[in-house]
Image 1 (cartoon, helix red, strand yellow):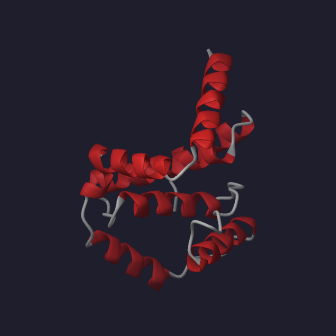
Image 2 (image 1 turned 90 degrees about the vertical axis):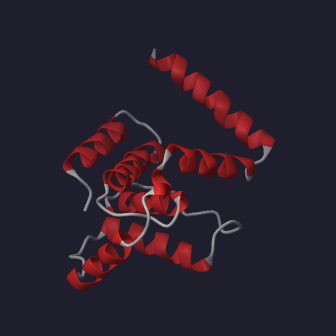
Length: 148
């Protein structure tokens, strides 16, 4: 269950008209924080990010479905189920939640280190085309100048 502060920040981002990925970033940030403070671990930085995105979808953030070319069928199925959960919430299974939490507690905490996150960001960026990276950098520069 996401913290109230995270939900508030995400709603604020939505009200300001920010992209769904920015809203979801709040949930990812929370998840990284949980791993760093020792609430639970994660096998990799990618897993920590995935947990954050899942929480975002379940909280009602309208994230686009994952790219079919770069994700497995099970990942797409999970994302679809999470989005559905966000639209029609229902009570989570207590047994399943506890089992997941216990499994995560056995994982390491290094996955949320700045080194691991940096490595993850670089590998993700390298999978995108030069044109793609350039476009997002230009957009970032545009929105940055609009905010200041």
